[in-house]
Length: 226
Image 1 (spheres, rainbow, N blue to C red):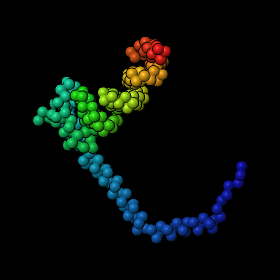
Image 2: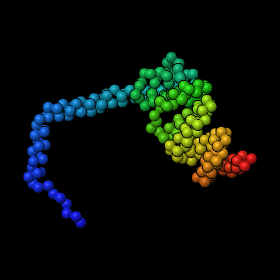
Image 3: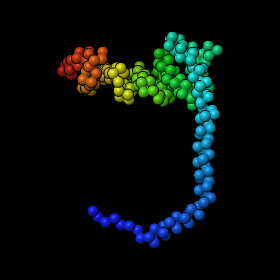
Image 4: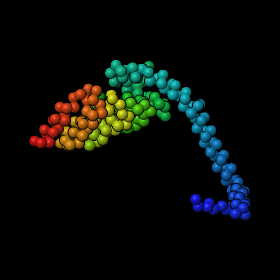
């Protein structure tokens, strides 16, 4: 083992003295920096505890009816409210920075998708930043649907793959891989489609998608050979 070089005691002492001298010369600046950091941290915790947490609670209570209307497919009520309870558009505007407002972007995007407002749907869904992995999968998939409706097939395929691989599971992964595969097949990219179909068959054989993949694989093989 090579000998480790150790600085002579005098050199260590000189370095310590230099550091102490630097601290003395910059004491005022350091005080301002530390004080500034303290103010930032205190402001963050104050904003969170005194403003954001109560706003989150209020926003969650206010969004209850909008979510209920969404579940009933009363889309206009879910978006705009009824005068007594706000819709998702008001929740986004009145409760900025809350999780309820963030989730309202998701619901609004899905509503716009159902209403055929595909560009608006994409904008809203991209503004959603989900903590729940499954909801994030669905948001990516909905963006894929919107791009597909707009005829932007490459973008749609990319988002279907994001939806499939962001949080892999037996419910949404094979569903979105199948959507990506079908769109690849539609755009005559049979080899890429076959690869996804085979992945569904091998990794998710017990799902509805997995059980039907033989006919999809046979179809793209026939298309490739024709």
